[in-house]
Image 1 (cartoon, rainbow, N blue to C red):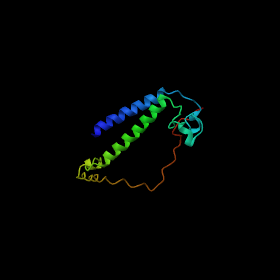
Image 2: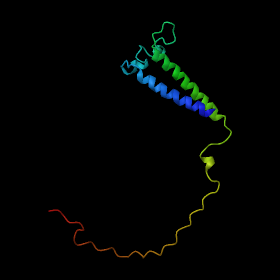
Image 3: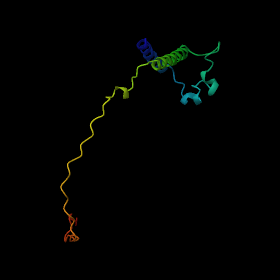
Image 4: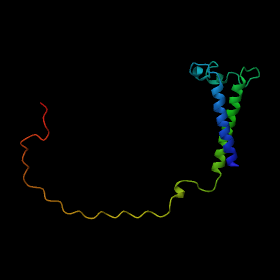
Length: 130
């Protein structure tokens, strides 16, 4: 059941992308979030749901596909939360803990620091460009 809905969901998503790409762009960076149909906010659908709405076939198809996409998304989410089995990655980890790493072998004692300060080198270490 869930696999069938998932396949339908993917087909709707592909169809939605295709229908959106087929539509003519009205420019103006979405017309102030109005989709280029004038105004923003409540007028963003441009009379899509009115009897005399001037929405084209592609606009109506986009609306139907978008509603179907949301419906299948919600249905898949409801089906996923209804599972009783745990499918977490943490549930699949082995129960036993790995053995603690063994401490490294003790190193030989470091030589004692000389009490005198080393003498300054008489010549520079790196060559000097002339």
